[in-house]
Length: 119
Image 1 (cartoon, rainbow, N blue to C red):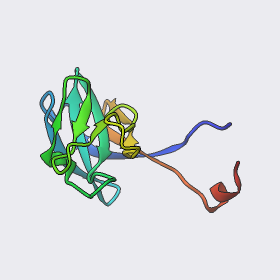
Image 2 (image 1 turned 90 degrees about the vertical axis):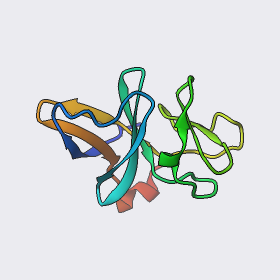
Image 3 (image 1 turned 90 degrees about the horizontal axis):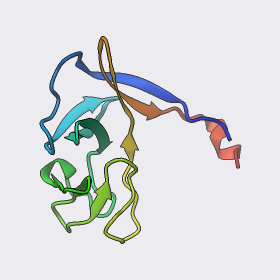
Image 4 (image 1 turned 60 degrees about the vertical axis):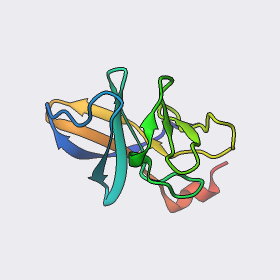
């Protein structure tokens, strides 16, 4: 199995405080809205909308376990891996964040038409 490749997109300059602890903010990267939060000192990025009913996750909250809670139906998603921790079976897209000397980047998976032929 090959390692996942990412296209890194800068969304903030170096040294900028993007979000306070447990605050969810919306940034624009790769021509899309993405939620970013700081939890236990780390930065995490995930989808703008809940995969269940499209609730705006920036209007939700981060709980003590590192889950973003959708404001619509209270579904919970782990911000580190996207798993639905309240048990409904949904998956939240999430993205790696890299803090570099020149800025803060979000990694978007690179895809190819040939990916459909991979097992």
